[in-house]
Amino acid sequence: MWILYACGSALFAGVTSILAKCGIRKTDSNVATAVRTIVVLAFSWLMVLLVGSGAEIGQIQGRTFLFLILSGLATGASWLCYFRALQIGDINKVVPIDKSSTVLTIVLAFVFLHETISLVKAAGIVLIAAGTFLMIERKMERSSSAEKERSMEETHSMEETHSMEEKRSIEEKHFIEEKRSMDETRSMEEMRSAEKKAAGQGGIKAKSWLLYAAGSAVFASLTAILGKIGITGVESNLGTAIRTCVVLIMAWVMVFATGKQKTVKEIPRGELGFICLSGLATGGSWLCYYKALQEGPASVVVPVDKLSILVTVAFSRLVFGERLSVKSGLGLGLIVAGTMLMLF
Image (spheres, rainbow, N blue to C red):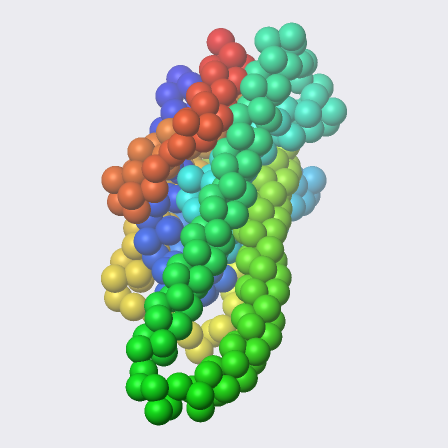
């Protein structure tokens, strides 16, 4: 039964990424995270009321509470990194890195939960790591290609400008040539300066989305391990609701710390709708995920959950028109193959 819950988690998680991307086009990622967490919290406590597990909160041991809180903090950090990466990077590139947390989770499960790593699982780890690398590499190549295209367009534009100047009247030719010579000197200096600045900004941006995505993966791994420990002996819906309280506090602390609280009222209605829908999808994913963690091994539940990448890639093609290259497609195939190896 836990396999079905893990598959449900993957489905909802894949939809969450698409809805969240639609909701942070103009909205600050930290603000979006804080708003959507309100929806997740309401959804989580609604489920607690439906299953009637609220009365059990007084029976939770201090150690379990501690790990639930730590898991919530790790989740909050993972979300903040993930949605920032989504805002500045391509969804088809950010998601594979986030899903690579599978590898770290298996290693941590081996160290802290004493779950075994067989040869098959080891092979799966290698395939997932190789597939993730291929999808990351493609992003770098596309960035370089885009810079070359922009450079060619600028050169073509300069050539057209020069051609128009040569057609001016003979009487103004001498004056124009002198002025053009001076302008070209200044223009070349400005272009060099602009190119250096653009290259620096492009490099920083490329590194930023990658760092945020990597941070999301690391914290997601910690979330799984801490959540597995904290969810033991606690009804899964109640455990999820307690963790969500921690995430909500952390998210709003980040909003106020960055001075973004005033922008909440400025969120476009369309984006607000997508943010709320992503919160509902996240709530559904969490409830399935922690129910699966409670009944099944973390080293298998997590890989199944990460198959949400298939849902994300499919919807990103339909919604955003993002296409996978041959190399990226091969990387995706390796990630899925590695995940299936660890499952079966």
